[in-house]
Length: 117
Length: 110
Image (tube, rainbow over all chains, first blue to last red; front, top):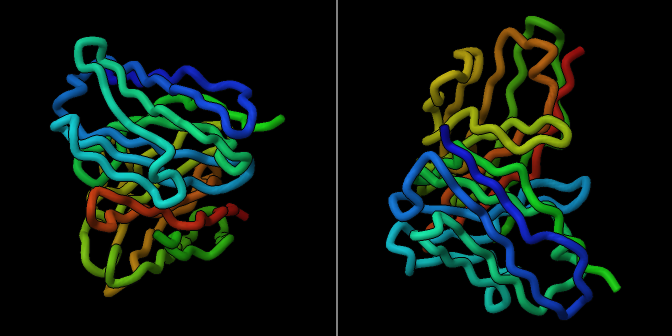
């Protein structure tokens, strides 16, 4: 059974940093693209980042480029999202999802990040 | 990276059909066949309903269907059921390892 479990969310001050984790099971992390998607309270889904199967090639939304970094530890079957210089508009539930080539069939339950002083 | 445009709301009676549009540009929907549709119930993670414009994942009822013409993709839900009441989002690959989601449509079953 495929499972994705996010963790690492919480309350952080503007300008601060946070690292989200996404522990996966039921599939081999290095065999799939992976994405991060966020959803601000009461708002729609926004794609954030993608990590290619090679673990090197990445893509970012303009709104997070230069501030967020996606990576993985295949040995730990864990995907990460390092978030720096956080702003109030980064407040959202962050989901990780498995990308089977342009579609996201498997999602975690999400972790809430709140940026506030 | 502008969001794809969806109508904010759509509705239909039980047993009837509803169609949701998703309008992008020649940089995303118009070029790539990696258009997907997701259903999201309140407080839940999104669920993939359609991939690659018109493919239904295993377990998704054939009441859900997708099409694309030019820069606009569409999702049709036939034989509306109470549980179809949810938010629906389209998504498209936009090149250079990026994706874009639609603005979302709230479907109400009357």
